[in-house]
Length: 265
Image 1 (cartoon, rainbow, N blue to C red):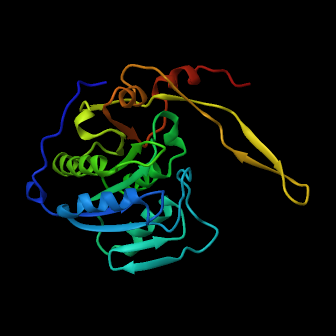
Image 2: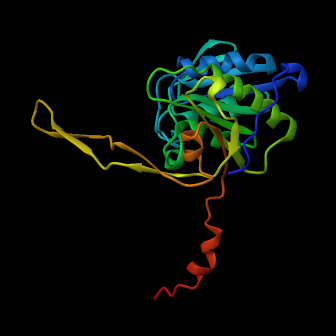
């Protein structure tokens, strides 16, 4: 974990050239988090909100290939897509927006996306799709299960957007940001972290429907996380905003030699 830092106070849109920003999420276009994010980013330029028409949590990086997608234009900058977060970002960049955005910001998710969560997260996958399409992208999450004031996370998102616009991001890299659900005065700053490890229960809930057929709910309990210095989970637990750079290359480069030495007969 890098030394804790604080972003400088935001000076408004004048600090960078006006940007064209695409906002999406996995909680749906009417979620409180996306509204707070839009309000915070509006001073930075031309903001478009193109998001699923309903909740798509845990949709991961799913793309709809076997059915047509419908888009409801709420106005000339707000579009609801009857698909996944990945669908929404892909349609936005390749179809709805005539000019590509300068930045994609996904969120603000109601709940953390820490450790192994990122493999399931529609919030992270929306930013991943933006990155795949060559757009600097950020995924924002507020780490809470109950209620939640999105204003602190939204303000941080605006400051981070300015920093990314000014300095750019490494190739094929997106930022996964998790903000503790604390008042701004209680936050200890932000740190750049690595992906941690969550603990999940393996509970499967089994019931019978009125016709006697079994059905199941997947709903393993959250058992916390594996403590680790420098991880996103530990940073958030200690009161820091976590910024984790995620790379699209999933190759475990350190294992190439080991796997290459295997004898497959």
